[in-house]
Image (cartoon, rainbow, N blue to C red; front, side):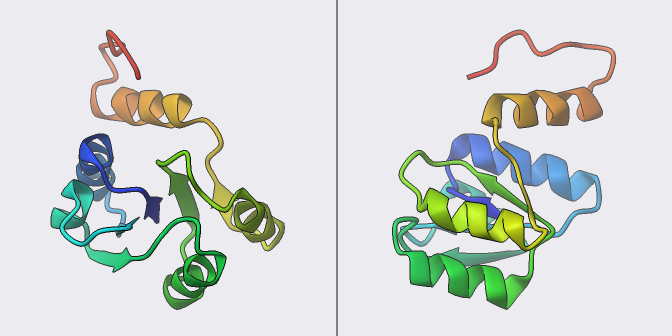
Length: 111
């Protein structure tokens, strides 16, 4: 589950799908870039803890990737406590995805 669905998230969704993952993209507005390629999507504010929890309960993700800064981090800690993996470092996650797609090349720059 991607929390935030911008252009970078879109590339991550495509990479994850190539690896056989099902991806749910979430953002505050419909039609966000990652939503256009995701398997499913949800529209809600990442600051709305109830809506975030409802999306997680609905989809039961194995992994949550926060891609936005404005988010209910307390909820992420709760999900982690329940055994859902929450990525903590976006740059590390993107570097890992890049290494899976191009193991012979290190990414030149990560943002």
